[in-house]
Amino acid sequence: MPRIAAAQTPEFREDVDAALTYALGVIADATAQGADLLVFPEAYLQGYLTDETSARRHALNLASPEFDTLLARLPKLGPTLVLGLIEADAGALFNTAAVIAHGRLLGRYRKTHLLGREQLFTPGTDSPVFETAGVKFGVNICYDTNFPQAAAKVADAGATLLVCPANNMMARPTAEHWRHRHNPARGERCRETGLWLISADVTGERDGRVAWGPTAVLNPDGEVVAQLPLERPGLLVFEMPV
Image (cartoon, rainbow, N blue to C red; front, side, top):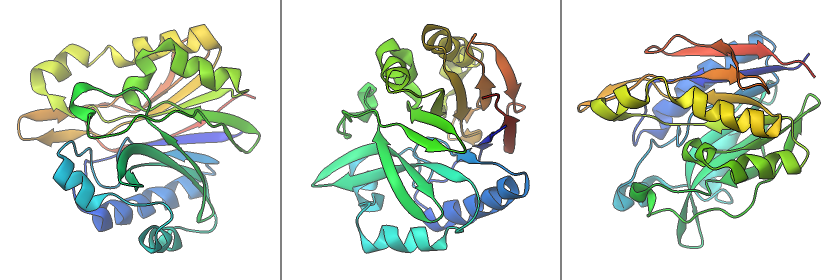
């Protein structure tokens, strides 16, 4: 059975080198555990930056020499990666999940449904499907999973797994409200579509804000079948029935 994995990480902000160094350790761990797919949180690489000046300063064009240099640091063996980042393209910014295999960019998904604080980003329009170890998967980024049509596009394209990079670093009262609501909302998408789902989130505290996750795997009945403990970093590895 294919092994899918998700990283629950500290939050890195405006420090791509530190984020990449940490990711390399996680990738090595996932590789040692035989993972075929490894998911990182939303906007993991630069941080979930909603100030346009900061976002533009750190955004990456996926066709640039800078991104090629980043790819060259990734191992040529190991799992396919879903890496959250801020992308720049033709003057626009995107909240993007890059899909990378063996140090090569396979494609990307751009977040379609944007929160009010995300208006610096341009919404994506495509829902590509990728394949690794016999598993076809598509991506919804965090808030996307509140919209049935976003998951339905992935299912209609022939996927069996929905990958959800997320970043739920919120003001503490908001985080308390949502602490146990993320999985039930995502479970609705599973039941509607028959998809499996794996999510990856950040954890920690910053400036009166807190993130607990969850980083979890849900089955097509919307049941949580594996989850990391809240409040601390870790790696979740799960054997997914085909």
